[in-house]
Image (cartoon, rainbow, N blue to C red; front, side, top):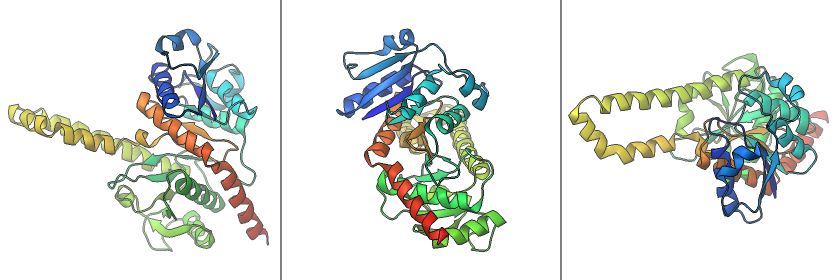
Length: 334
């Protein structure tokens, strides 16, 4: 299996990318990784286990402030663009970047292309739940606007991914809404609800945002606007909560002693809320797996994203989605 990785994307590139890649190569004996980026900056982090790690040298890279669509066309030798090109030309089975999210979505669309029958791809991270199982949320920003048919496609793609990669049998699919009643919400959610009831998925109906971290569903479907707000709200709440705890535990000598006693327990909670441990956000709906790793990914998070990508390729999830979408379109056309 061959995976292409943008070595220059992310806050801790290329060190975290290289170290994460080396962890993956040590874990998977049939894996070959090509890093796209500045060879002189990559080399200091190589070790004796770097035999299966290839480097495609380029000094050009995409910055976070670059305009996504324009930069993909302008910086043709950027590490992210060359990485996506490798997937397009079948030199790699999949690709990963922790860089500019918008640029990666553009590179995925322009270079890798959409699955036939999928109108729009969805950006889909797995977020934490209290029971540690996590849930897939899609879309979180690939498309701000959506139609009912798009949400149906998201539900099907998400269900296939969770069942095959996360190995959750007959995953529960919920539609994010302002209430659980079937007639609640906007025209978009009402129409999407009706479509999902007829779809070959385990649709459990509407779910509310307050129940997401309780594990109310294994797959939660929404439009990119609402999904991005939900994602940022969860992120912000977690960061604020730990900031408040830190402030409380450093207030005086007594609280500092208490902090020392529960330090390991607090770290466990923090790790449980760290969704980078579940891998990256998949750009589902493309002809090959494209994964967006978190911008602040460390080596372990990069390793998690590679593991996720490995299983996407291994289980041939793209072909499963293609087959299911083809059957769906045939049923809707008949």
